[in-house]
Image (cartoon, rainbow, N blue to C red; front, side):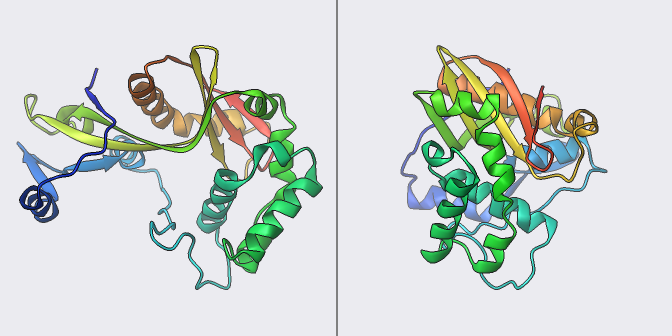
Length: 239
């Protein structure tokens, strides 16, 4: 297994400048960035798969200069709402609508983005067995950021066998503790039916496996359950 990092440190200025200038390193025949996201790592292993760009800016929140919402932006806005919603005020659709409207009034999201949010689907999740378990949990995390080290060969098959490690960053949509065990939830906004959700979930198996691996080491507890929740059809798929 890899080695895991979960810390915040102050780097010397000269080292920070070195990292800024040297964004990639050579691992034999392969050139790899110093840091990969789990999504990028998955893409390198499944290069034919299309993936969407994260539209959230770390400084300004969601993008505000758009009049239309595409599928990728709809997913980003939905995840943003799921990150900030008060999970204990989600008993029905009206509760969710009020919270999303409040986010719009406060400037967290635009009116166009608000109209792209499926409040019924969000309310459906929180009334589902999985959503009720989350609401009953004493300890839960959302948009949980973690880091792990994997070998260069694992990240890129053409890298040298002894080529060192690459840092991989993951952001888990949601997790909660059930006793001493972790339950991982990954929200999906894919337009799929309940019948096709199981098949679509296989596209995300590598990603969820990496998340479970990293979270277990960082939090010191096993990830014993992994779920994809497809909001569009209200279906939870256990991975």
